[in-house]
Each structure stands twice: as C-alpha cells, then as structure tokens.
Image 1 (cartoon, one colour):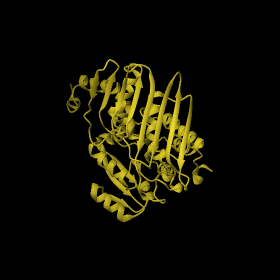
Image 2 (tube, one colour):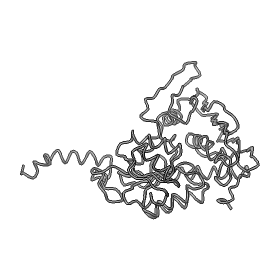
Image 3 (cartoon, rainbow, N blue to C red):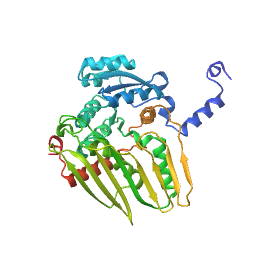
Image 4 (cartoon, rainbow, N blue to C red):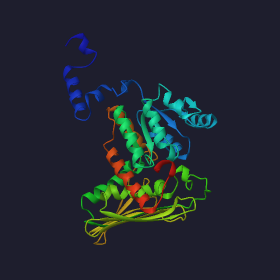
Length: 369
C-alpha cells in the first residue's frame, strides 16, 4: 500500500463501499452530485418557501425531522409575514415577494404553499428560475395546468412532485400492502369521508370561486386519491354536488364503479363535522382507517372469523417529513421524478377531478375557460 492510499483506506474497503452504494444509487448519487452540480456531502439542501399559511407551518416543522434539509428562505406577499415566519423557524432569508425566493441563487428546492389558483403560475415561475419544486395539492387546478408544469420540469431536467402527504405515510402504505396481498380478499366496498364545517365567509378560500374553492379540490381530493391508490381507475362514476351561490361545491358525493360488484363511496363537505374515516371491505374481512384517516394513525384489521388486529405505527416527526425526505432523497440521487408520487399518478388524479367537476358543473372561469 502506498502513502496516498493510506489516507483513503484500503483498496478493498473502497471497492466494497463503492459496490454497496451502486446497488442502491447511481454513480452521481454516490459522488453526491445533483442536477445542479453541487456535492450533497458538503451541504444540505436549502429549501425556499412560497407562502406562510398553516400548511407551510406544518411543513416547516417537518423539516426538523428531515435529514439533509435546511429551511433557508421564506417568501410572502408581505415582508412582515415573511420575517415573522423566518424568525419562528430560524430561516436566514425573508422576502416580501415570491419572485425573490425563486431568484435566490442559494435556494435549491421550493415548497409552494399558496392557494390553489396560484399553484401552476408559482410552479412555472420557480422552474423557469431553475429550482426544483414541491407543490401542494392539488398540483394544478386542472389537467391542462398540471401538464404545463410537468412538461416544463422535464424540459429543464428539474425535480417536480405533488405534495400529497398521505401517499408517504406508513399507515396508508400498509393498507395498500394488505389490499394487494389479498388479506381481506376481493375488495367489494371502499368508503372514505372527509367533512369539516367551515366558518369562512364567501371570500374565504373554501368558498371563493376565484381562489378555486370547494370541498373537492381541498379535502375531497384525499378520498379520490385513496380510491385510485388502492383500487385504480374506476370503470365509470357518478357525482353530485351541492353548490352554493358562488358556484363552488359545499358538499360532494361520488360513486366509483369497479369491475365486478365493487364500489367506492366518497364524500366531502364544508357543511358538517363528521368522523373522518375510511373503510375497505373485502369478502374475507375489512380494514378500518380510524378518525383522520389521511393523517398518521393506527389501522384495524377485522377478519370475518371475528378476530381483530390493531396495527400500530411509530411515526417520525409530524408526518409531512416523509414526503420531505422523499424530495431530498430524489434530488440527492439526481432524479427528476419520485417513484412513489409519480407524474403519471398526479395526472390520473387531476384528470379524475376534472371529470368529477365536469359531471357536477363546477367551473373555475379564470382557469377552465
């Protein structure tokens, strides 16, 4: 062994380490090189935020449990709001506009937490500034917007993902495993409910047509996601919405028909407070996802022989960290798309939401016309 090799370890050790990494990552990931050409081993991924609402607060807290992350820059339409948020989370930069976050040369990836109507425009702006993007659900207001976002990300070779946090939760993933393994037999009925009484006025984002309000895009999207994730696309569907004078859906009920005699019954509402539960019934048993099913929680497996099993999970962080970690890991590996929340699934989801809105006559004039 020569002196130069002593400083790095034996040739055998290096070879074993390199082969081990190659089993799981690309050469570029091994070297720590991302699309932007910087070394992961020498710096953390710096997050920029656009928006300072409650969901941004949740996601900021989640970064404390996300390896390889640093909350770096906050952007708001109000510099006071940005400074307050940055101070709470010790972010070094605060900006009084979204554009300044996108222009900051030290920001690597931007989390978009603005109202639905801004998701597409904000995402395109960030991609044009050569930033990776994690955009809150719904990805865009309609399929046309989502396709514009995905096309630009692919053109610029940048990472882009829809932030539908439930897709990454261990309890939701476990339900998928149980269904696919046939543990409850053939699924005959899926029910998923998400209601929460909103006290917002007509200008509130829940009811404002210009902000693309309504229960479907805000909370009903979780129900639709669960059915598509567990059972795939339906053969056909029916939907009926109770719309207010503003044209948004205050409540909506959806039926998905699957091959054979399988149904999914989904409903969401801003008009009532009910248990937010989901159940998957098979011909050998059922899975119960308890109250706030779309959040970290336990599940119950109930078999037809009367036996019941409570499946518990030990969660890290507040749950949003699972999707944050996926973003960090994907960027570190040089990926432009997640294998978990794929562009294809996001397109399938938004196309289904578009079809449901069309069935119910829900139109967002500034986006759909």
